[in-house]
Length: 114
Image 1: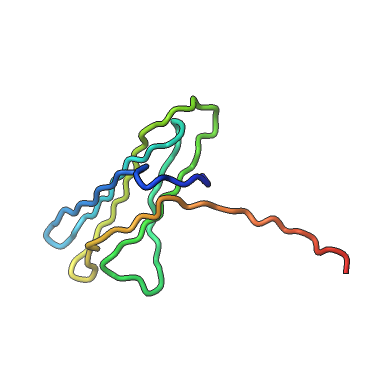
Image 2: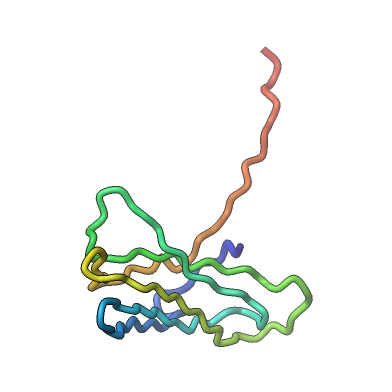
C-alpha cells in the first residue's frame, strides 16, 4: 500500500443509488491523480463504533505498481458497489471517504542491557 497522501483535490467522487422493487444499489465512483501509471485502487467499507448509520465510511487503499513506470500523473479510476435489501437494510445518505490507508510495519527491537 502507498504511504503517500493526496491533496484535498486529488480525487473526484460521485455516489449514486438505483432503486429496485426491494433493493437499492449504491455505487461510489472516483478518479484519483496518481504519480505513475499502474496503481491499483480499492475502496473498502469500515465499521466505526458509534458511527451514524446514515453514513457509509470507506477507505481508499492504493497498491503501487511493481515494475518501473514513467513518472507522470495518471488519472486512475476506482469504484465501490453495495446492494441494500429493503426493508431490513437502508442505504446511506452520506459517504465519507478516507483518501489513504497506509500500512506501517512494526519492527521488533531487542531490549537494551538492563
